[in-house]
Image 1: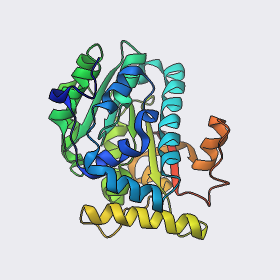
Image 2: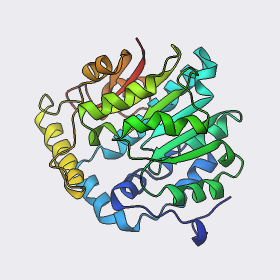
Image 3: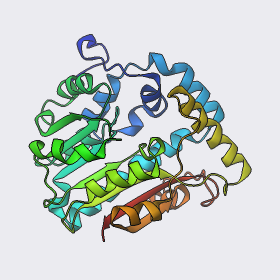
Image 4: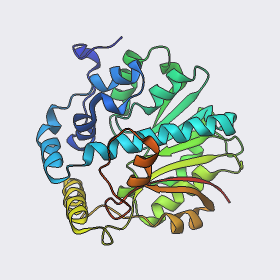
Length: 285
């Protein structure tokens, strides 16, 4: 098993990506190999950013925990209702996520494809070190996801096809894509099989939130955006995106809804006015 001291496999990434691990730590993984991957992440570049995030957005860890828990529960249900769809998961904008390792560890015949444009080679090596048994079933594709037009062609050699059901998990990505870019990505993900599913975390409108939530989220989003040359992160109208991508919304839950489902004794959000974070489950129309 990999350890933090295995310097040959330390996973270095930019401060924005490392910030998620610095804040969430091993709570963002469900298996020992998943936690081993997160232990390999060098978070030194993100300490100041993580501190700022905790200060300006005190529920940041809760958001991360809720979205990862809900994604896994959606996957569990899909595996029960449509087993073939859970045999291949595709994770665009995977970043430093342990989700692929977790799923392929818990399901020995499942495969995963991660798509990203940064630290792909480093993460491939870290996955091999942290999860040698699952690593052969996890493929990584280097691609700018704003170029959805070339995505299908690059996925085909990796064993994906439009006619084979699969599940896409899209976390933390919609914030960086315009409506048109996000709809194009999900239209590609839709494919042609009716059992394909898309799990999408997204940020809704902030102007409808209570002032304390609106101000905290706006400060956080603009801080992240400015680091990558954007004035602000994008908000998403999931109904409009689904319509333009040829999808239907099966479920759409706010953070408070997910807290009710997780029932872990913690309540940070009273209702949909306390957080713009949502998790949606989408399917072909």
